[in-house]
Length: 78
Image (cartoon, rainbow, N blue to C red):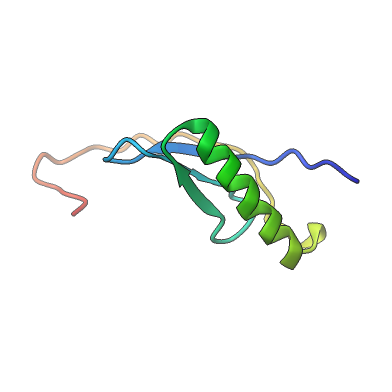
């Protein structure tokens, strides 16, 4: 069995839950109360994605970039 090394994005939401996603698959997201739980959950989601997606059809992960933007005190994301 071929082993894949996949990038996983980890964030914390406003309720303190860990949100994880794999950018190689469209819609590949999960969450957990701990990082370990979130990683186990995303592993299950990835396994389901792999059942429907050929390895050759995966998105190409390039890397992370940082972008600086100004924040207007009146602006809101809501």
